[in-house]
Image (cartoon, rainbow, N blue to C red; front, side, top):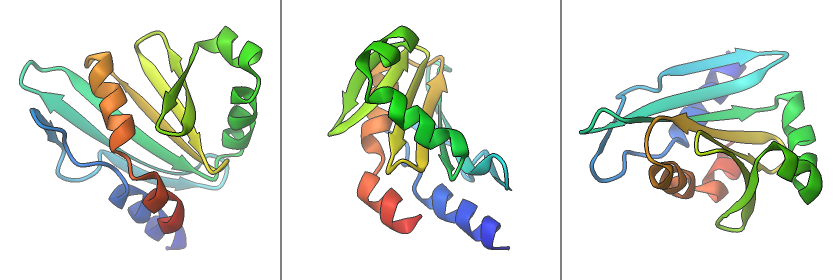
Length: 135
């Protein structure tokens, strides 16, 4: 029950659709697992049929380790390209995936066949302060 409430809190932190995009009414998925943490995701689609998916995962043991990798530019650079989303470091793997740790316990993952600019815009649309305080 607590895990379900936590997943619902994550879902409320997912951004709304950007102009020209439509979002699924209800998050695509919400799950809670002792080993994988709690997650919520939502898909967005534009008129051209391209899609972007934003996933938020909290309390996965791998998130803190991933955050540590981003502090080492050499190591992170071997996995992708270090980018900034606001004042946060993130890793962009080709133009396909953006991963951004938040508060060493939340992992934001953005994927899809939509344009890179849209993925970056969705990453910037997440209210990080609210994500941290709400979860």
